[in-house]
Amino acid sequence: MSETIRVPAGGVTPVSKRVMNLANFLDQARRRYPDAPALVMGGDGLSWRELDQRVSALALALRAQGLTKGDRLLVHSRNGFEMVETQLAAFRLGAVWAPANFRISPDESQWLAELTEAKVLIIGAEFEHHYQAIRDISENLSFTVRIGDAAFGDAVYEDFLREYEGQTCVNVDVEHDDPCWFFFTSGTTGKSKAAVLTHGQMGFITTNHLCDLMPGTDQATDASLVVAPLSHGSGIHYLTQLARGVKTVLPASSGFDADEIWGLVETHRITNLFTVPTIVKMLVEDPASERHDHSSLRYIIYAGAPMYRADQKRALERLGKVLVQYYGLGEVTGNITVLPPRLHSADDDGDFKVGTCGYDRTAMQVSVQDDEGQELPPHATGEICVCGLGVFAGYYANPDANAKSFRNGWFRTGDLGHLDDEGFLYITGRASDMFISGGSNIYPREIEEKMLTHPEIREVAIVGMPDERWGEIGVAAVVPIEGRQLDAEALQAWVKERVSGYKVPRRYHFFETLPKSNYGKITKKIIRQAIEEREARP
Image (cartoon, rainbow, N blue to C red; front, top):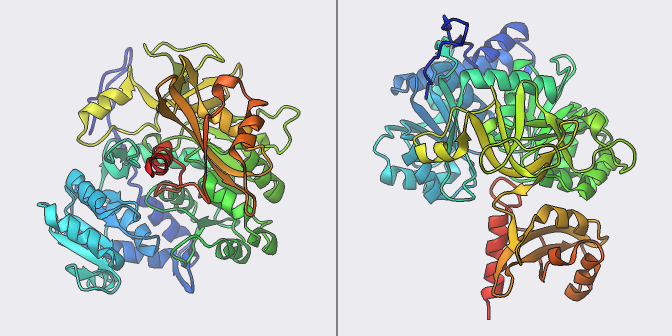
């Protein structure tokens, strides 16, 4: 995926594009804080020295199975020490870490194996169906390591490491454009794609996250908690903690447990965590947030989807000014805008910019463009585009997707929005979320924000559905607060008082909870499918 080096105008051809191997972060932490805690999960823990030794043993064992620089290591596992170790061992070898979301189906895991041409698979014992699906089609897979007890695979993880216990593996030399991570997209519009992240790009991302999201993060004062899959955003967040030698704590529960999470915050004096808006909402609304001390928190970083204003207010009232929002996609490793704690407010009055997702991240540039790629003036709605060192190298083996996603060097996010006069970005929604009713463009986000101010609505999502008269109409999926029932006609009348008539949803479906993706996001594709299933019933 390396690009041709061009001679800059008036300059010289770069002498070197060598960069630090990301695994050097682990070397640094081991040298500085050898006996300090690196990872904690349940009653188990690893020091930085122990983690480094295990990563070296894993890297040597993988090398013995033929995994070398540029080869892909496919990983399918829940969060655990092993996920961190596989990431750093792949980096150390110069191989490409390809972690799947453990919640995907066997068919989807089969596609990822086919796409990546992975040579080695490391997989949890509970995912035998995924293993069988991969082995059925994979011509490249030569070795499988199983985490836990089961009857499949070529080696057991702990036994696999034991042969090389105590031996050292040196980090492979890498250049800026050498790939280190295949970051799989969620596949909401088709098959997942592999966004190629590189050592040089991720070195910049780690620095940028520490600069913009968690300034002042330090080994002596901080502790981090993992509450989302390490295969995606949490894995990026982990690199920032690794770079500063900060202890990372992983919940022992296999599913979401608010009481455990808040208990870990109190016990370990957690100062930062990364998650998505739906999880922030669930944590804040759970009574456990009142039972445990969370005064140590400095940064709760949320991203991956817009956070509705009503949820934002509730979180700020409960937790104080600790929220950090960033906007970005996996392809830009979350690195487009930031809204720091000081710019969050539970009060709609004053200087607070309601609805913004912040301003450009350091060394990144945001441009709102029309369909021809021309930059639009402030307050004009168009496609959000971005350039800078945080942008990925492109999609692996997918030239069509690359051609659609880049224009004049800008990465096209597919999101719609506008900038204000000060350069703050406001997201209207995905281009694919917009629908046209009676010739008018309708952006669901605006209506959803209004509906969430209703005292008896907990969640809402609006999608465009076909209509013979209007072309499309808005249909709302609504979750009432627990113990309440809503009447569709009364709700529609309430909405009519607050938004323009042509924007008012025509039909309403009530759910106990909105269906979400494997990433915990509310996606319009899944909502639309759920509504279609309901409306197809006799």
